[in-house]
Image 1 (cartoon, protein in one colour):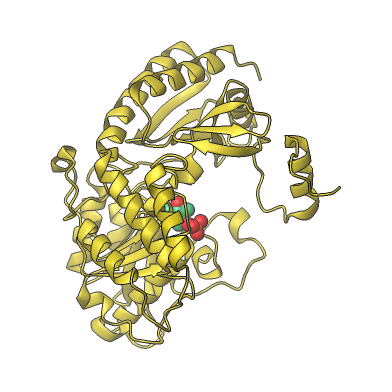
Image 2: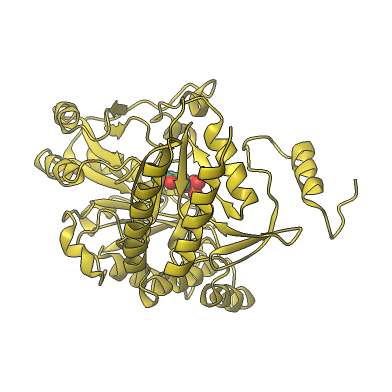
Length: 425
Ligand SMILES: *Cc1c(COP(=O)(O)O)cnc(C)c1O
């Protein structure tokens, strides 16, 4: 088959099946355009995007201000490598550190790279500042975590699909139960622990929201043991959960709901996905000087990390979050969405519960873990003009772009309602 300009959905899927590694199992829809909360397939059918590229497109598809920053910078300078300075990186680092309230930023490209960076930073800090004996540093992680796909990161995973036949694994990972303060207390008795790496809400695992005080107590425990608290906010960050950060500590967020949140400021903050509005691969590790200063020239790096396009795009994407009050909008629409889902749960046996924060939510389907009901519901939602994807078994994550209006959200609720009430397996 020749690669021609206009392919049908069937053609595109066939090409991927024939020429692409089969490392994903996508819903059979082929998208060719996006704008705001909408995407269109190649046949012109319009959908609400209820995944937002796993919370990368929080600012909506092709946001004009972000795309304009991308185009402008692309015409001036794209990449210098860090062998030389460029006139965008310093500007961006000042902007982003002030935005999130940290002394320093280390720029990378993907979420996994930023997690790797945080692990390296924590180990080096552990040896040089805490005095852990050489090569004995441990990182505490939580069961059912998702931090990315590199060998070191999957060494912290207990998902058999992600780990089987990829060994040998990186040592030094201690896995404990999520949302279990006693387990953390126990694990912290080991003096070789450098850091606790945690997601404020476990997104991939099925949007597991921990108890209200879990993150706050975990943070306090880490402090008492001189252990770094590393927040992986690649998915929960950038306004997704109704505040700028799910751990929202001493940041510059003007969201009035912040006063009701636990006051946690991670020692190390990991960001990715929506820091660029899904326009360009941009990730970052933020920390204060006393921690970041252990990284010296030659210790770590990335050819593309901190490139001028990434810097321009990320600044534009973060400005949009503030200008359009996306944290506030996610907070309000999230409350509305969950209360509408609660009503729906009373009308159907198909859904067991809804949970989440802001616009990071999931419904749990009333069926066995290995059933295909959640997948089939997503297929029916697709037919009715809304795209969502099951995560880990019988759970469907709902994470629309944060630029959604109340009217649009209510239309989505009615699509979900109609689909579930009419659904036959
Ligand atoms: C997506 C994600 C990552 C990995 O990001 P990539 O850009 O896919 O490497 C890490 N942590 C969390 C919590 C994520 O959701």
